[in-house]
Length: 67
Image (tube, rainbow, N blue to C red):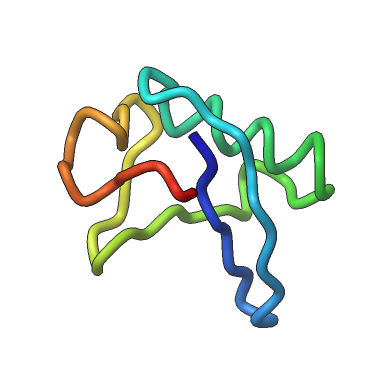
């Protein structure tokens, strides 16, 4: 599935992820593709901040694939 990532500078881009990907893996993909260091990233969805070992796709039903 694809998720849309929005930076603090209001830049938006999409990242391909698997539902089973952990937050750390997603952050590593963002760093590889866009150069944002893992240590400076914070993933937030609907006001919830995810921790490194969570799987966002399985933690909430609100994460659905974008068409």
